[in-house]
Image (cartoon, rainbow, N blue to C red; front, side, top):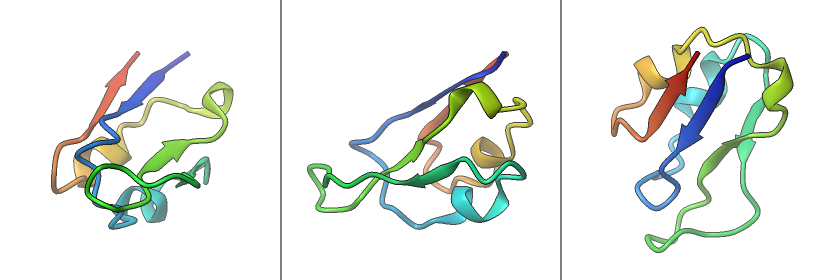
Length: 67
């Protein structure tokens, strides 16, 4: 099973990771981070396949994928 970690304080909520996730398990949090953005988060880690598409497309390198 893969583990995906987002640095929520650095996420600017651009949504690129949401758009490329093949399992559609990334969405935006209800809360705001210190910059005033809704950070992305994985909503069902058990379904993550560890493809790292989210981490690869992230322009701010806020996503880490461990397999």
